[in-house]
Image 1 (tube, one colour):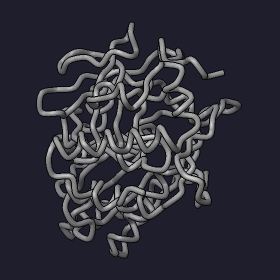
Image 2 (cartoon, one colour):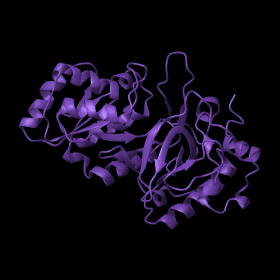
Image 3 (cartoon, helix red, strand yellow):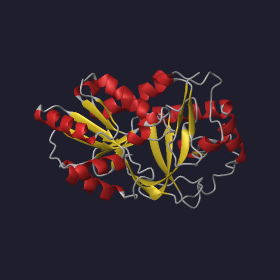
Image 4 (cartoon, helix red, strand yellow):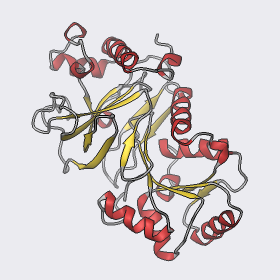
Length: 326
């Protein structure tokens, strides 16, 4: 079994690559769904010498198959939100402590001590469900902040406005984290000029509003909250790690997470940095599910390993990689 301490103490690119190859071999041997996918591609550990050679499992498999690399009991199953009647992704979690370590250490890397912030969460669509990985993470952030004002807000905009203005008067550091449609609804009702508050969007209109490109969304939010930049969190049900952007929609990942892009016409080909393609993610915290995922997002990776999310594939399977999705 792989020691999770090693995952969260990666210091160099070589350490990441060595561990990624080790986890690939482990999941090839212990994950039936992933093994079947690799077999269909005729990919065996003896053929995989570099990270770029590792097969990336299409994210739709989390909707159609059980993706597990462990026979231990499932502690919790996180489910994607989806639209009414759609098939949702299921991420079975064997060890919630790994998830906690991942999001706690990831946040600390980019924003330092959570106790320095009041955490306000505007996540109405997620609070309506008890199986949301985002709600689980933010609930822990609120608890860890240990600030009396920290908390969730559903649709009580009046109370949130008063709390924000009070915290601004007290010059307290605040993170207001919310889904895009709720943040937009809020600033259409109230206007602010915030000096001590980080506005962090987690994406997703979830069918509530017309989709906006991130640049347009951020312009509206910057104007409404009276801030210079909008921060973003990039995560998903199928991952146990998050990337963060502190502005300009350029994301950075923690040391145990890496983003690559694949050719949109040949899903098995990893592209050089700087080219737009389908986003593939290596999340080594996904030790007990699958650490190698081909998402349906489009993006570009830069030379310093930061990345940009440009859009999504239009209601389509990931070409060349949907061999088992039914």
